[in-house]
Amino acid sequence: MNSVTYVDLHQQVASDIDIEIEAALARLAPASGTSAAKSAVVRLLRHQKLRHPLSVLPMLVHAIETGKPGPAAPLSAVHVLWWTSACYLDDLADGGGTTASETLSQNEALLASVISGTVLPFQIVRALPVSAETQVALTAEVATGWVVGTEGQLVDIDGDVEHATRASVVEAYRGKSGGPFSMITAMAAILADASDEKVELWREFGYLFGILWQIFNDQEDILSGRNEDLLNGTVTYLLSCALDGTPTLPAREHLLGACAAARHSEEGRAELTRLLLAPDVLDRYRADLDGFRDASHRLLDALGGDEQYTAILRHLVDHAAGMSLRPTPPAPVAASA
Image (cartoon, rainbow, N blue to C red):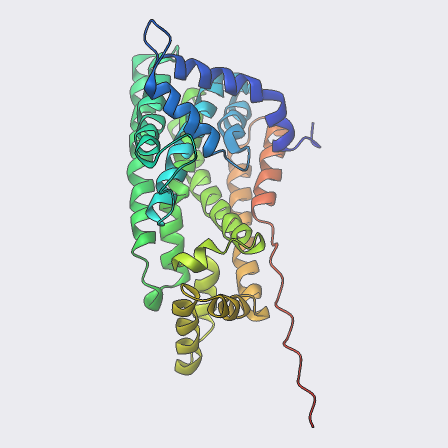
């Protein structure tokens, strides 16, 4: 079991998660079986497909606490539906999503995202065979997850690059990514009837994992060549590492100038990428990644539980904390005449 990865586990439970999503969608359809709302959400799910199968996270938490992942499949459905909504709204906030797809207009996608992220998660919780007290606690987690995640996203949108620090970016990441992950890990712990102390430890694990996963996404954005963060002027953790390493005014002004130029020109993006991938910046970045990873592992040590499933979650943490970026090769020196 120790060799099983989170992707392997997802392959084993994917059909169970799909069944829960189908059951949630069925609640939108009237007796006739047809529903414009259901149709719009289905099309949004197809358009906004998640790239990584992190829907296994609540099942892992539940299995670590109880040895059984299955009962948390409805929460995995909540995870998929919530992130489908949040990712579309994030694209919209970044200036994209004007046309969701050939079969889904922007207005349809926006309305579908409201249902996907709020109505369906609440209905899934209400359908769980748990006590009223547990339902109230789970419902509160969904509501809190939206508030914390939205707060982090708003901080990110209003990011002030001139005054950004690693601490300020971590705070934003704790909200926009950590908030949703802490929501789902806490929900899984509550469903597993974990103690209040353990629920809070799982919540903190979710925050840390969210920071790691946001940094993972930041790296993917550069490696894929999409460079959406550069185009959008997003204050990423990598950028904060570069800013913290430029104490002199000329160097800082050059970096800030490259940030501004990156939003409008290929040359500006190339120069900013060169500055971000400087060896000293990546050394700082790598050290902090290691720190977040080690803190996550310490929490898993404290939580204990089923070691078979803990091993899978440890692997996922290590995957999220992987360092994929490499220093930019130095520019060739022109030969002298």
